Length: 343
Image (cartoon, rainbow, N blue to C red; front, side):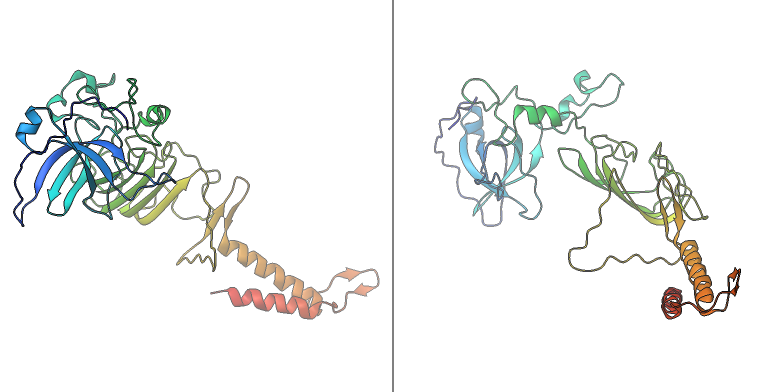
């Protein structure tokens, strides 16, 4: 077992029994995250905890197991982080990661160290403060976990907490992924704050290390809008769209915007269906295709080919007009099938 940088005499103190309808609330420090051979966990951790004031004043901590309070929705903490521990009749449960180890202590919010050169609050998701508590490998090197190496911590340390507006609900991971439940508000500077009615809901799903939503810098994103336009920033579309309606950044209404460097749609066992009340357009660097226009042209081409092959239209040659083609039946079938696609 690894050494720990705080004193623990594992004393057995008489703390009394909890009432059947009561819970004890404590502050715990993560000592170990239990992983299987595949580096996966069911959620169990071991934490150092002082369950009485006397223990705390004596710097006497017990090492106890704890499990997620909500087994369906929890964040697996890292070694050296602090968690809320809830003590019940059947054991101890942990909820969330709390200051000062993972974010910052409330009394230091105005500390100059938390303000960047731009004068803005500099709160990092992976900020670790080990001044008051430290688990190391016995030689002074901090321990983060079985799979969280020093290089990994350094690579993810730049991730800052997402910025939110009043009333927003945020689900955020420590590596730069998030789901934000928010709304359209003209007083808030967001990509969806330009056009549309205030108070309409928005869901923003993002993978990216920036604090603010920006389709230009996000690695990938899904925006679900209800009555808003969307500002695509510096993204250039060439060509922008195959249809002649509103451009993508001018449309106001319920829409879903999906973006990434590459999109892959995979159907493992059945069809992929695209259905539109209006137009379907596909744009590449070379072509801007409106499916209605494309199919109208394909139909017209098949009609002309069928007329030539059936003798309804002829080509003038040196010995007279052309006759009926040997592939007349095939051309008629193609024309009929294309006409059957038309709505």
